[in-house]
Length: 356
Image 1 (spheres, rainbow, N blue to C red):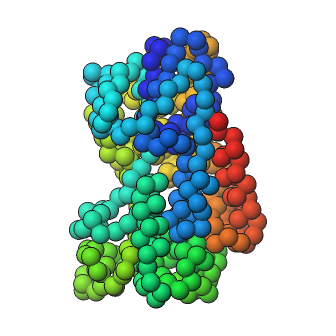
Image 2: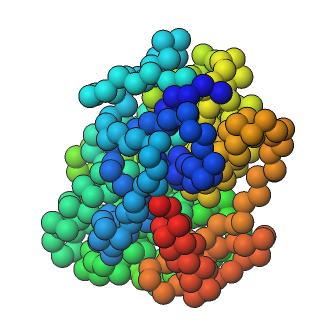
Image 3: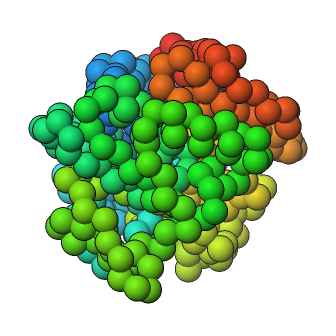
């Protein structure tokens, strides 16, 4: 395996890869890590950054330090596969092996002006900007959240605790919030939202967003807002699209990879995290496991042994409802109340304090 490795992205997948290999990295290998931020951030808590319940320092963790790893703060612009180059705003990097762990971006599903007029909690920078506009709101102003998935529910419930004077409405396309989770969880969460005066409108298909209203349904109904937050779906970072010529997209446009996360039709380029195809929905947990497996593959090559990946086994789903209660599934068992909240807090604490 050649010596210069370029890793794009220092999120859950990238950091997991580094933590797996660094204790055993050969002396002649160098790794350049490119990320727009100078710290690893705890993405599952971006919602709390946006709502105002967490300071930005609480969701940052230092990068792993190693003499053979260089961190480059830059914006990635293009992957030139055949030239073995990554073009950034300030740097041009050559690679022998490339690892793409760029994560995801908001998917606006071609809804007119949604990207222009809505705010986001998908990236650190966007979550900070959302926090800024929410902090400037007046009492009785209206926040509309488009989407009824995990991040939307956590954001809405936390926003209610931080800003009890605001009006909050969630718009969900399906029949109920958290449509992929069991009915028992849906009922528990819906009761919580109702009890805390968070309005939930279901079976809502957003057709357009302008600077004052969200338009929905074919009858062109609308709901006014002071701040609108988009949390209705994600897609792979479009920079990874350059790799689709050497693979195939799945139904979510994620890149299909081999068992070792390498592109099927180009050697030496690997994809992990939200850009990589999987039988599972994108999540921080999945990205962490994929990064670890890729690290194990690199170790097997360096140590001249066979790579046999273990099947991915997710431990479950956990969600917050404010600062005292939560919900989730662990080993197919539904858990509600304080216990899932405590478990998730412990998982996030462990991740933050076992990175560097």
